[in-house]
Length: 101
Ligand SMILES: [Mg+2]
View (cartoon, helix red, strand yellow):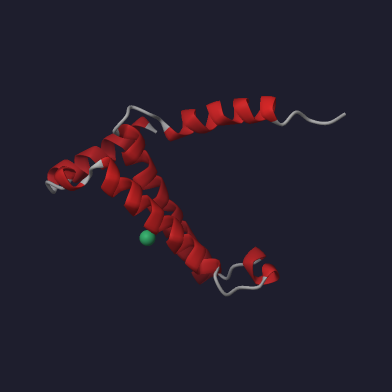
């Protein structure tokens, strides 16, 4: 995660793009990239959505990458690691939704 964070920071600095990367803009960009994932599945029936063809899967991989990029950049603004956030959330979910015996 820290390698990705550094690579993204270097990429932005080298292009002087950091001025565009406000939390507002990053959250909006993240939302757009999530919508691009939704678009892949938009007109597929449930069965088709379970078995993407290679082109669709490649497209999905690109959009997941975009989502991770913006999520990582947004988290970095507040020194938050998305993986650690997810792990914390899973701990909370386990308490909130205990396994029924
Ligand atoms: Mg995209």
